[in-house]
Length: 608
Image 1: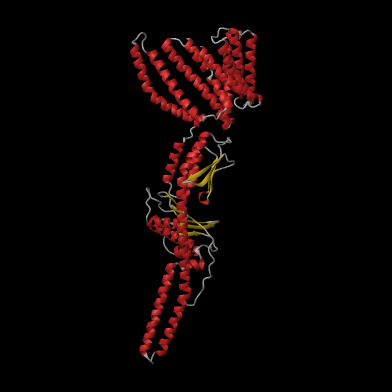
Image 2: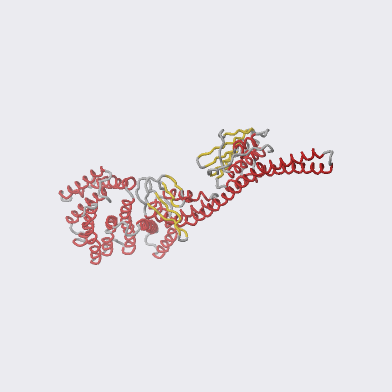
């Protein structure tokens, strides 16, 4: 008994001093004073009357403890009555305890109503108010403090149950000297949890501690209950060895299922159904495996983060390649750097959950783990984006060079050759009848020049359709696609005025429309094919939709769709193919638009 008293004093004395010191600084005065009172009462009982022989003394201590506990339940952890009406059950609880003391503790014997006032005041009103506070009003800091109290009382209840079962099994009673000493120490666990929550809530990560505590409690209480039930069901006076073997068998059978259930319960209670870091990383890995467009990686990472933790929103800032945002970001609760091979690629800016202002330690661990995993993915995204940009520059330069060559051939070389052809024809006429041999040579030269002129025109046409340079993309679509007779009927929805685009963008858009319409004619059996072309800020939108038979299931891409996809990705655009059997098909293309370089007005020549 003495060793237990020493332990109690060693624990309660520094905690009471720290709590009173904080209360004197007017920091959370009510919960600190109430907790100090409970600890002081426990320590005083352990030292003055450990055996509980004085009825008056014990009654007075109980009255003080219960009054302090009522105040604590209504004001923990921030010292405010939340909700405000909890002030009334606290006043009632204190008044009842004062009345009991004034009556000489005779109310303790009123079995008709005395237990009921405790049930209504404590469980329904005060404990209900604490649950309401935790769920609806508490922030991250208040919840961390409350979890310490829960952990303390959970450990106290679990150890009491296990200790009682063990002592009954060994000695037949839990009221011996050992049981009284252990009970004296265990009575401190709940108040100690309250004190830690008020004094140092982040001394260790409370989420991890509570997670482990719930798992251990589920297993401990479950195993103890199964052993007690097994022992009670066995016939009295039976073989003690058989009873031991039966209890051992029950323990072996239930431990693993209880451990699994305990992990599930702990995860649900502590993290509210939110995944741990490994689960979040696994979900991100699966999404990245399914992602076909590397440019979607930043948004995929942000969506995974927000969905996993229930955040209002998140943002990736840094290089323009990684710039992305998901959800709303009314305020930033934390910033986390994303590094890969020593280089900081970007920064996570994370909003808190609705109703909260900061992130928990668990949230920070999840974001840190996700940032480490996202580094490699974002680095890959940057590499692919740079490759696509370089390829787009090459394609753009190629198309601009083709346009220049076509213009030079058509506007310069063709007229020159046409003039030479006229000269050769004139020479033929002048020498006809004078020198027929030279006239025949001149006629052959004129024919050769005409053939060369026709071939150069064909080469120029193959390099780039002239209608693109002369009238633009919409006119080229009308000329090359809509002018064709037969089904389906082509409907073009596009601006009347010319859209000024780069050579690469015009050429790619025209060929995409041609490929899409050709697919409709070959496979869709459609009546109407609608082509929409629009320019919005920095994006050219091209959509080809039909009312035909739709896409087969499973979908197989032919050469036409693959060609469209390659042209889109060459310019860093995006492609969405949608459709279902019997519901038509839609091909939507978005191509990044850049200002077209200055171009010379097409020169009209008489020979062209």
